[in-house]
Length: 234
Picture 1 (cartoon, one colour):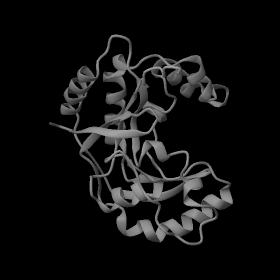
Picture 2 (tube, rainbow, N blue to C red):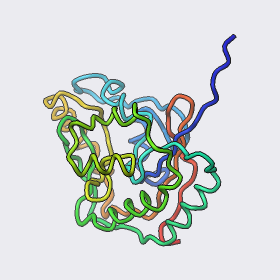
Picture 3 (tube, rainbow, N blue to C red):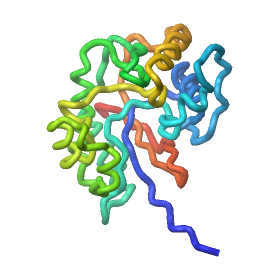
Picture 4 (cartoon, rainbow, N blue to C red):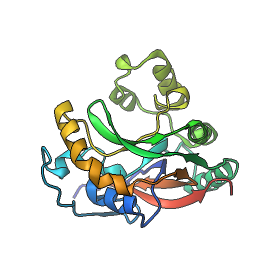
């Protein structure tokens, strides 16, 4: 019997909705993965969608409902998980919470996401600080990982960020969003958005507050689950 290689987890720092909130509960069921509990969830019954929910949500499912602040990474050689937790607590203590007007459903090209309404500068500063201050814990991306980002189609700024920070959409290229679907034909994305809009409307917070960040770790199937929530500003 061939021995399986040991699982090497990835880590990520995300915004995730408060546990037990209406948005968190709907998002876990919609995606079919509850990152807070680390378990699969049954999809809701929603009629009229252009294809099954399992197909619509296949790509973002393993990440759970989230907005990326520091994208997934492997630990650098010699770095320990406990030290990452300590460094995250230290970094978060120095960052003030971000408060925006609310969340809204948006179609971003071929996929649907929730985006923030109002001034997002404070949230961008939180994300940028986490990317920079915790960069020493990030192993450099492999050539295969870089290739998956399709660097030939990135802007010069995005390619520079990919080379330096391992991810193209940081700092001046950061655009906060909570992904709800994979890429769909635009007509299907529009149709899905029309059905989701009235369902999501009463679930979206007003104002939208980011007062904690969440550290997640991937399992052997690549699915991310919460490790801990860390308050901003101590």
